[in-house]
Length: 191
Image 1 (tube, rainbow, N blue to C red):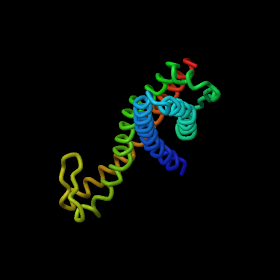
Image 2: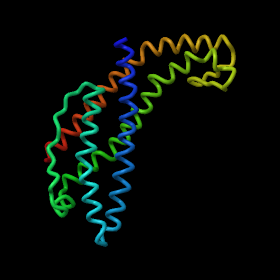
Image 3: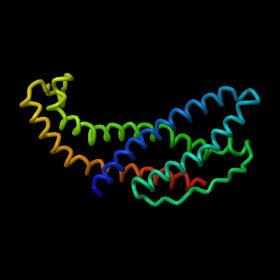
Image 4: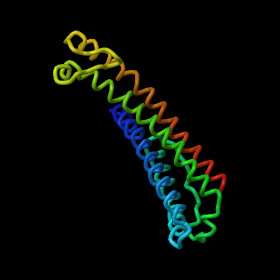
């Protein structure tokens, strides 16, 4: 039972890493570009300061997810919420923090999405192939599953993969948690 819960936590953390990376990418890219674009007006700079004030919240969300799912103990970041707007906008550490959170995290999140699919969903689809090959055109690893013997071979291969790939997923989860820890340590060293 503990192994099942561990695998579910790994699966959830891999998808959560993708979701948080996509959130960082979408939110920060759109909001920073918009606020810099309208910074010649009075509205742009306060919007940019408000965007920078979301950094501690999102980093804490990331830290809590790593602690809960990857079992990595990461201390909280100390962030002064009372900084003046001009200090927040002109502080290069905020710009580096957003830069670290946007692009690397998005790309690594996409890789964890692929890993979650390959490590968990693909073997389950292969195990169910004797039931699904008549309903769908199934192709697994460039092999068309269109007969019952091929579906049974795919089912056996899916069982073997389901026994082996969760270990790889656990390694990827520990790696993702370590990346989160490194990102937070880098940002902490700038503060």
